[in-house]
Image (cartoon, rainbow over all chains, first blue to last red; front, top):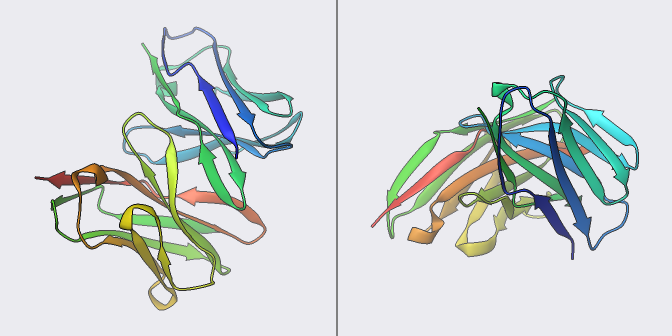
Length: 110
Length: 113
């Protein structure tokens, strides 16, 4: 079965600093990969998804970008963080139309 | 287009009482419907999934949900709440050629002793 690794678990960053969150998947090949953000009281917002290496679809125009340099690696980045980037970031993959999530990264931008 | 509405951001029940979490969806084609649970500081876990095989779907931890097409609903129930059921619950829908689900805003279940 697939396993999703996300790190770090928590992160505190100043406004204007860069960001790099990494997600890796084990136990599956050529997975579809997703980045979601969960802000307080706002549910889950799909940020990016990828169906293969170098293929990124952006759902919401914003201060973030994503990259997929390897088959099982998905990276979420920002050059300059905003206060509004604070939230809980979740990486996910799908198997048989069901999503499996990593344990998430709690990002606080101060 | 697809969307999900979860009625009530918070639901509070006593231990042993019935749990009912409401979800209504809109979809232009027959949907796949999901309930996910999120415990504090963790990712989401799938509780159950509806794919048209049966309208009553049984999930993990004693939860079940019933698909009612006429009401466009997929409410989640459990006969008797446990303290360990306290968590955030998300309803989601996917349909058509895209299996990427759209999530509701979530309902926080609070269980009182």
